[in-house]
Length: 303
Image (cartoon, rainbow, N blue to C red; front, side, top):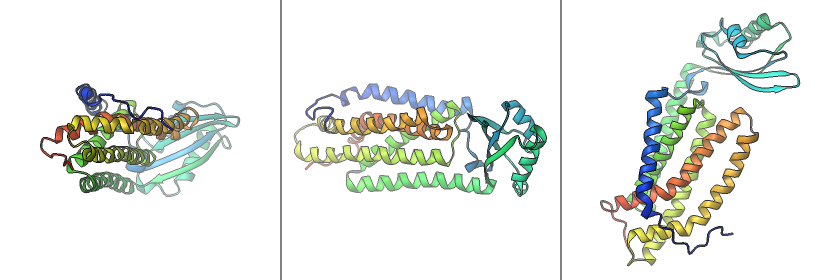
């Protein structure tokens, strides 16, 4: 199935300066999120604490819940999850000292029963992570990302050329910065589920880039007398149908999750949505222009 004819001749590289401008603006806006909004809101997976899913069998609001939980935590985060026939469900996140996590479920139930009446509150789920475990997970996530990028650079350098490897890694950093900015500006929580989504996006993006680099390598041999701009443009056009079809059908599933998914699934879907949109954009308008720019210092071998 081909949505776009293979003989198209769009001049993508001719518009690379517009892409530089767009990418530059996106990166600056993303980096400005830190001084303006502060750090990314980390979930209890990385900070430690308690997350509880609670069903209230009568009408309550977030202010009442925060007041009721004040004896257990100084600043609980309360988020309405859904309304059901049996009541209203809320997600509550609290920072709790590690020494107080023992029998915390009973303490939480007793506190809520005292505030709202016995039998009117049901704890449907409780997740606890100690501060040390959260710190270890945060450090492991950072190292996993760094090691993955280094191994990717080595793999791309051996399979293709060092310029293509650097282009692919810088392309991924471009996408990760934009996803980071999105989460900080929107105040969405970053947890292990979102990390899984971002690693999925990294794999998705690099697969797209490898397909493009593979086509560039073939074109370098078949179009020896053409300029690198023509070779790169030809490669992008030849893989354009595959890129649009793959990204388009994947995004249909992600949009379904955004529309019909629960709160947790929506955050997961948002990470995929933003990552895939800009991953597709960067594989066309960032990776190839970077290879072209690096060719002056790390020439792409011909023949």
